[in-house]
Length: 122
Image (cartoon, rainbow, N blue to C red):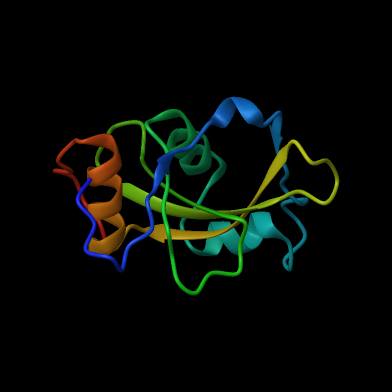
């Protein structure tokens, strides 16, 4: 990857370091499950993003532990999903929010995966 000096190197995200996804009760309107769902980030989206070439990208500013970009299962949409390390267990990921990846996020994903994104993004 060629850097101009303003970027931080992104890396492939190692999903094998994590044991589970920490979701709040779906009936908790203030929980992460309800918040993510309002943004279109479902359990399926999270699962797909973590399975289909997830890349840790740099967002500034960000108030989460990890910003991950990755495609859905059908490779039709590239998503950016923010995660925190769960306070319940250190090896659980806690989804915070997400959206269709923006152009700069797509470019980071392309640079680290060396693939050209041809699907939808935000």
